[in-house]
Image (cartoon, rainbow, N blue to C red; front, top):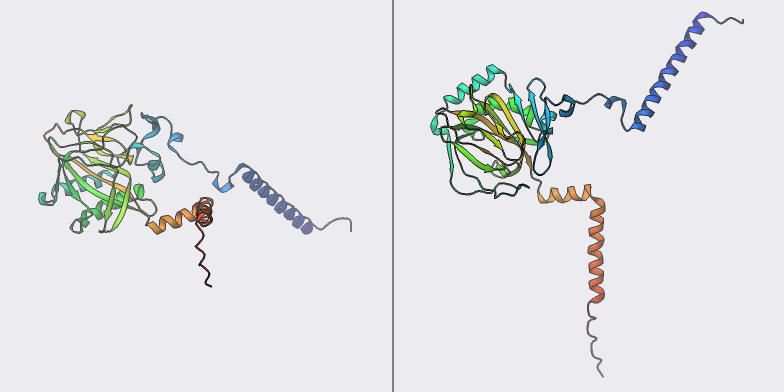
Length: 318
């Protein structure tokens, strides 16, 4: 009677193990809650800073310290790119895809390219940089929003969307063709865009993919970042993507070489909320401010009622 059966002892040991695991698990959750995180969220998140100085540096901007980055497509993600104030992604397309797209660009009918030759000042967005927001430009553009250009859009859009199209965002896409003398003067890209004739969108991030084999600084056509004092020039080389937050002051120097500078460029677009959506968003996200406004309006009308003159008393008749 004093000796327990082996199978009973085994069951008891298993029960104690389960209790120990449950206690350890509970302790882990308590520690996680105390630390402000859950065990499932303790995995290391890859950031530009975690990649080290070879991939990220502080932009020496006149107004603030920003983040610049340089990534390869093999490690680039939507989240890493979104961290950048301005940065570069090398080997952005698979090389065979990049060459196929370039060959298709070269045979597009010249009549379908739009000459952008704007000699009037145009205002673009807002910037803390104290400059007049005007732009002058001279290059050719192929609009991938047009219905008859959808074949080319369907070829390139899937390659950009994973990196630049966030939730509820849209992409505007264009092809660029710069020849000898083409240029764009100082501007920020800040603008409101109309799609489908009625939807209005804000440009949030710009991206430019360059497809120019053997291009050098001496060939001109350099992207010049006017806000980063430390890394102002970017060469439009082969399969190199440049991206930046909008608005940001920049320009393109005149092309000096007697050859074509090819690019695919566009913007990540955020839809502007309607007046009603903006009102609902304000009420739901700022309830205290909403209550304060309501009380202020009520107080105003109460005060107005108190200071209003009493209506004249009608004269009594005999």
